[in-house]
Image (cartoon, rainbow, N blue to C red; front, side):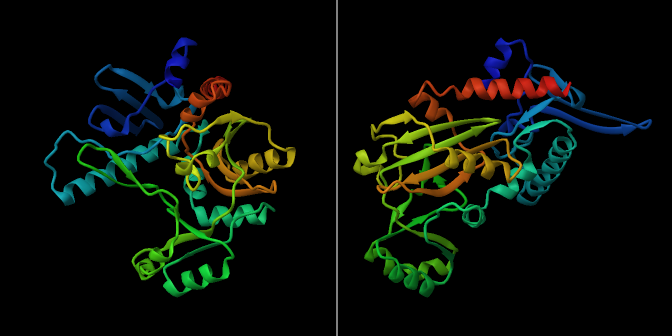
Length: 314
């Protein structure tokens, strides 16, 4: 959708679909006669871009590479993936341009436990939390919390896909006594548990460049979204809202502290009016928010940001 808007404005975006790369692309990094030649070509359309023409990069999401041969042995495929990744990152990281957002910044900003430490250090409220593979520590944590605790995945909510390629997700889960009888399973993999924070409503704060968008999510209106609002079968209200100045300032500063130009921050507002930080997704989805709140022109803002940054680099 952003690419379409850029085309409408006379720009020439070049898109790399990683699930077709390098099979359907030609990539070149060459140094001869004391000069570099770097280019990318999409083979089906012969569309080509050189490194010197790139003024802005929007890094959306990763995917498994695709190779011309589909019968590579496991060791061969691992080698092919590593070599492809090496060249692609060398090409991209050598660019001197505007990033939404830079891979190094994205890598350093994705660790959820570190985010909590940083948010707390910056003076924001966070839930009581524990990340561990020690069952006894989880039991002690649960006993010391007045209310309930929840479990949430740290790296991704996507567990697997079924035979129809439909994702199986791990939603935020309220821990019951039944769950606690199986708590020894945390020995297998470190898990994140937090106190359950009562909600008046939730907020999704999207920062795009210098612009901030705040969406109020009335997650408590439906039983299906009270613990985790990401159940889109529930018809709950989303509306644009204005943040208090100090909260807006925190969101901007938090994103900037990682040298990011984009962030999707989740907050809880408690019945008593406290703002509680949950997490920031440095590559989070925002289209669903705009679809639910059309007045939040995030696609337009992303288009403007990339176009203006690219033109200022030239």
